[in-house]
Amino acid sequence: MIKQNIVFIENKAGSLQKVTELLAEAGIDIYGFACFDAPEFALFRMITNQADEAEKLLSENGYMNRVTEVIAVDLKDEVGGLNTVLQVLGNCNVNLDYIYTSYHRENSLPIMVLQTDDVFVTENVLSNNGFRVLNSLED
Image 1 (cartoon, rainbow, N blue to C red):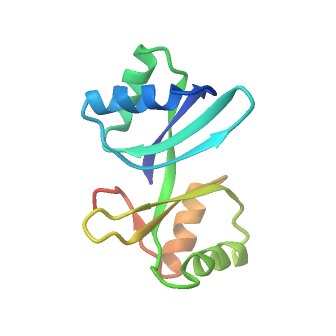
Image 2 (image 1 turned 90 degrees about the vertical axis):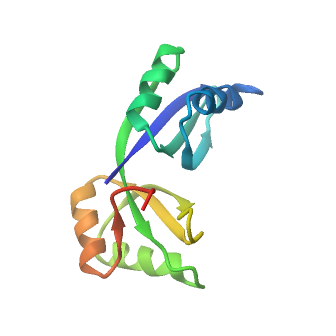
């Protein structure tokens, strides 16, 4: 599993940029992210190179945020690559809370970031079906 930051951001122009600016100024690198809109707040999920430091920095600057654990798994960069992973998870009765993508920096191959109600079972399902589960996005 890898650590993910979740930040609640006011849903107005420039709010997301203020968060990314804080992180950039602190030298915290964002490897992958997804932002989901809600009426008053947005949820900004991200994988960084320093999850605990990002959480502390954001808290110190008044942002409600937390660190959670998610699964990152290699995807094949081909037609049906995502479908193959989803098919295995569905066949094993794994319910997904959400997914988003990132990529390996050195070779630009895709990575799927996912959250389920039982990350340990999901990691085992993926590993036992030949998928590479990552411990870091820096690999």
